[in-house]
Length: 231
Image 1 (cartoon, one colour):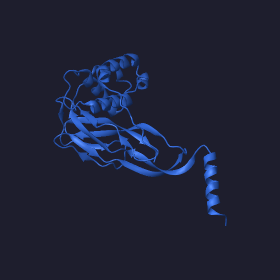
Image 2: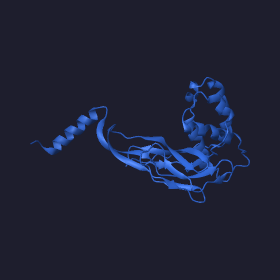
Image 3: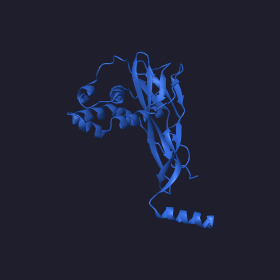
Image 4: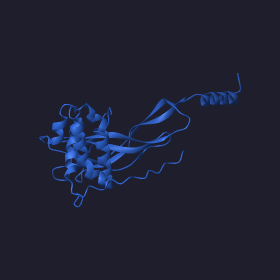
């Protein structure tokens, strides 16, 4: 039997000599998330809406209160991964889905700072806009009818029309800095510029989309992310 200390040092040196090592790490399936659900037609909170992390099997559902607010517990799973010896910090996001009677499902993005060591840090309270189930098509729908397939994309097109009608001098009470950042990130992730390339009228569609979200982008203030110290 060899010296266990020597064996450990030998394994460590061998590991550091490779590009990466096998290790156990907490993987974020969804972050702790808080937010508010708003009826886009009235700018009032939606009570009794069911909120959950989208695309996460077995994700629990919470119900909004009279103020439309919700808090979702995150989920972290311990996994064996191929990881570099030096960890990293990066911005990540997961999608939230909301259902309520008489309204089409709403979607939003929960942005957070992920890191190799330690828990994630949520960046903002998540705003979820909901529209009537029978809401008509918008001009952007007409330009993207041949290329938008997912329900969250159709919802995002309605969100783009909503933000285009915002009056910067008379924003609704719920539209704070968190809400602005959350809406901008959601639109960027669900309707990225590359996605319009599949549309027959892609250039016209993206030009209209950019015009619609211009007022929202003007309100968005860059957030300074303080990188956490390594643990």
